[in-house]
Length: 67
Image (cartoon, helix red, strand yellow):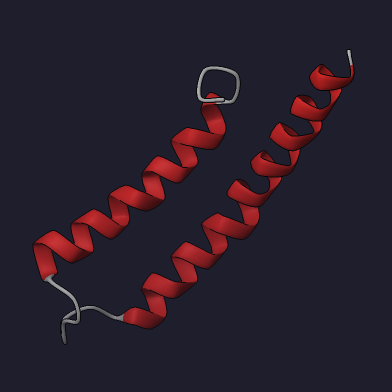
């Protein structure tokens, strides 16, 4: 999957990277983190990129399984 759909995994990796920075650099929960902004960024990235890429990957996988 990772070699067939690299964009999907790049997007997921960037979301994991953001999580890692927040948890390791700031600690959870932390008063200095604006969770409204974090949620907005995560939700926007998820909706605008990850879901679209996931849908495309599923269709491609289904098509290749049908061949």
